[in-house]
Each structure stands twice: as structure tokens, then as C-alpha cells.
Image 1 (cartoon, one colour):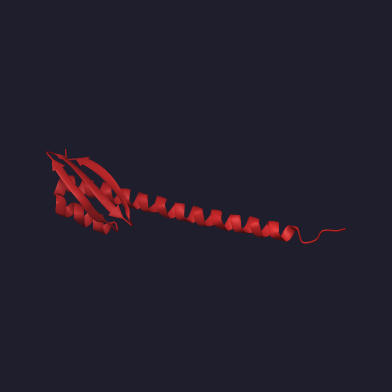
Image 2 (cartoon, rainbow, N blue to C red; image 1 turned 180 degrees about the vertical axis):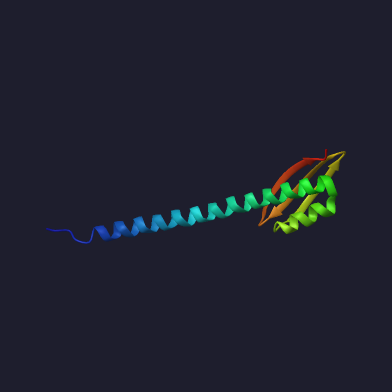
Length: 96
């Protein structure tokens, strides 16, 4: 007795698993990019804010596609939190 058609179900499972892996990697890539963009916005806002103040930090966060979530200044040091695409990042800068 010959068994036929055993490869087709196995290939369907392999293709389905490969599709899930690709979708998962795509989502992971989106998260990594959003975190990097949030960190860029936070860094730029902190550097600008340390020299020019809060309004400048807000402008730079917005220019980087995000928003300034928090701002704290103590002496010459500034700490900001920026949000881009649902991801938040914190950065500090010190004015010389």
C-alpha cells in the first residue's frame, strides 16, 4: 500500500510557521525603530533644552515626530522624556 499526499500537510505547516516568524520579526523591527526614534527625539530635546530652555526642547521633540512628555531642570542639567509612536525615552544633558 502506497501513501500519497503526506508532504502537502507538512509543507502547509512549514509555510504557516514561516509566515508567523516573518510577521513577528516585522513587529519586532517596528518596535526597535520606534524606540530609536524616541531616543533620538529625547537626545535632541535634552541638548536643545539645556542651552535654550523648555520651549526649544518641545520644538525639537516635535520636529523629530514626537512630543515632550516631561521636563526637569536642575541647575545646568536638564532631563527630558520624549515619546514617539507610543515608545518613550529619557535623556539628560548639561549646559557648559
